[in-house]
Image 1 (cartoon, one colour):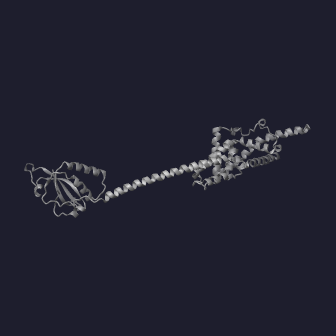
Image 2 (image 1 turned 60 degrees about the vertical axis):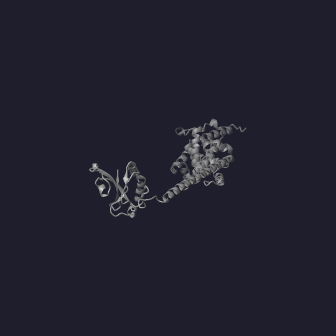
Image 3 (image 1 turned 135 degrees about the vertical axis):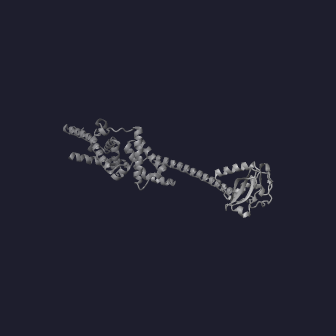
Length: 191
Length: 202
């Protein structure tokens, strides 16, 4: 590709664009941003591809690292996403009234996905990115640490914290739904 | 604890569900098209830059070659007459009215066989030349045994002042009114450190 082979670029793009696009989408929750970021990542690879050092990590990690930088920059600039809870208020869950959801167990697949997606998006960026990388992109701790530029232990602890935050955000929703279901059963009203 | 465990499992399965749901998501094909266009533009720009750079290098190389050829030719030009090829120094020197600097300068350069001299030295020579321009000098007269090979070995011309009576030893007329005054002379000193020729200057 660096030698000017357009087909090599196309092949590389088709192989890698999915991960980059999904990562950007999961991080930003915005399709336009994800598209822009994907384009910017590959433009960067075209123009500055020589900075990639295979000895320092995989190409996939390199691309996701570039994508992460672009996403965070876009989020700062656009302020599209404001985390619901900052570090001092991380235990605050998503407002149930705005979620308009049913208990997790009873939710349809699409609703479950939407619920979890919103919960992930509501995480502060530093927790969100470890969830996206380790849980959604299914990368190892080592790969995530390489992308994030931090220690593996940091990734592990952030992921642990992120899961706790997600549970805290999702549990009230489930409890509310269980209570509602119990009330309906006791009243004998299923209509 | 069971509730907690259940929540963990639920969360894991929910995240897996989300990941599976998003697995099929890809960037729209327009992006690939835009990237291809950008790639073509970049390649074309790089090619034009390298093409322009090629021409720049080629022109620079041509200029260097031309300069080298000129320098080589000027060096290979037939040498101007040297002191050795000059007509032999007259046994009976006569006062020469015309300035001798035009002959002396190339002679000096060829005697020393140094194509380049330091700027300071050159300016000093220029001063001498300007000075000599206004002077009248005799031809060089040999001091003892003297031949052309002595000049070709190189040497130095040194300006000295001598008693006017020295003129007589070379058979030159002396103004007795100025007998006690000094007279300027250029002495050619060979590489052996000996004075081989002299000329008087007024």
